[in-house]
View (cartoon, rainbow, N blue to C red):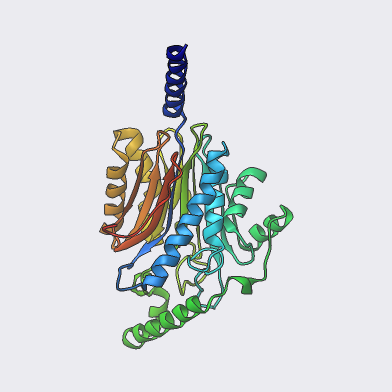
Length: 342
Ligand code: ASP
C-alpha cells in the first residue's frame, strides 16, 4: 500500500515535471532606447528608476503572455507602461521638435500574418502604439500620418489628450541645449546649415521604446514607439514607424524592434536586414543583429536592436555605450540591464 502510494506520488511528480518541460515557451524582450548611457551619465537614483520601470513593463507583458494572451497584446501592454512614463522618449516624455512640439511615431507588426500598422507625426494620441494597432486591425492601410491618424484614432475610441500632456521640463531643456549647439554650428557654417545639421551632434541618449514577444500559440510580434529626435524639423519621420527599418515581425524568421539614429536604420533597412539574414543564410540571430548594426555603423550611425524568434531565442545587441533593456520568460523572473557590461 505504502509502496503504491509512493509510486503514485512519483508518477504524479514525474508527469508534473514532464508537463512543465513541454509547456510552450513564452518570451518578452524590451528596450527603452540606446545611447551614451554610462555610470557617469546617470545617477544611482535614475538607474533605480529605470530598473523599476523596465521591470514593471516586463511584468505587464508577462501577465498577458502567461495567461495565454497574444504576443500583440503583450507588446502593447509592455510599451504602454513605458509610454506612460516620463523616463522614456515615447508618449509622455517624448522629445521636442524644433518648433517646440511633441510629434510621435509608432508601429506594430504581427508575425503570424505579417500584417502591420503605423502612425507618424501624431501629437495628441496618448498611446501611439495602440493607434498603430488600430491602423493594422481596423483599416486596410499600414501607415497613417499626422491629422488623419489622429482623426482615425479618435474615431476608434482611443484616448486623446491635450498635447501639453506629453511635455516634461527635462525634454524642454534638452531642446534648448540642442538649439544652442545648432546656433554654434550655424555661426561657423553660415546660411543654410540649419537645414543640414547632423542629428548625431545632439546628446545621444535616445529613449525610444520597443518590445518583441512570443506567445503560447507560437506567434511573435514586434512594436516600437518614439518621440523621434530632439530638434527634428519639417515633419521629420524616423525609422520607428517604418516597417523593415525600426520594426519587423515574421513567424518564419524573427521579430525586431530598433532604436538609434533613425536615418541610418532606414537607409540600411535594419529590421528586415536581420530577418533576411536569418531567412536566406540561416545566420544565428545575435550574429545577424551584429551584422546589421555594423552596416548602421558604416554610415556613422549607432543604436541597438532586440530580436526574438518563435523558439524563444533572443538577442539584445547595441553598438552604443548602453541600452535600457530587459527580458522575461516562462519562469516569470524579470531581468533588466542598462550598461554594456551588465
Ligand atoms: N530611432 C528613433 C528615431 O530616429 C530615435 C530613437 O531610437 O530614440 O526617430
